[in-house]
Figure 1 (cartoon, rainbow, N blue to C red):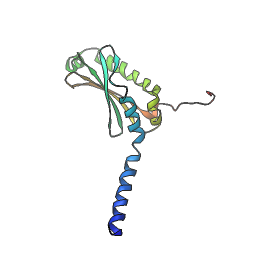
Figure 2 (cartoon, helix red, strand yellow):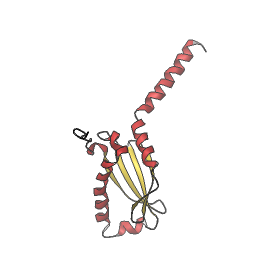
Figure 3 (cartoon, one colour):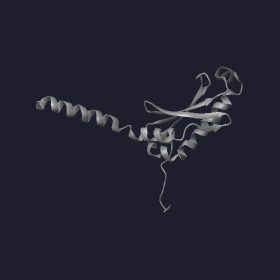
Figure 4 (cartoon, helix red, strand yellow):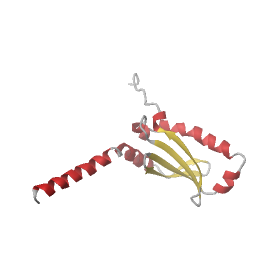
Length: 138
C-alpha cells in the first residue's frame, strides 16, 4: 500500500479507537450490571436489562402483570413515581457504577408493562453520587 493511503488508514483506525475510549467506563458498568440480570426488583417487578442510550445508562424494569395506562390513571400514581425516584439513590451503592460518579452520565430506571408501554422513568445524575471516601478504611 502506498504511504499516503496507509497513513490515512492508520489515522482513521486511531480516530475510531479514540472515539470509543470515552465510553469504556460506561460500557464496563453496563456489562457488569447486565451480568446480574434478570434480577428481582420489588414484588413482581424484574430488572430485565441494562443498555446505553447516549449518556444514559438505562435499567429496564418490567411489570409482568401491570398495565401502564391503568397505573398512570391511578390517583396514587404521583406517589408511586416519587417513591421510585427516592429509591434511585441506592444506585450510588452499586460498585460497578462507582467509576461513573461525578460524570455527566445519567442513571435511568425505565418501568414498563408486559406490552413495553412505559409507566415512567426515574433518573439520577451520576454526579449526584458522591465518590467513596476510602481514607482510613484500610
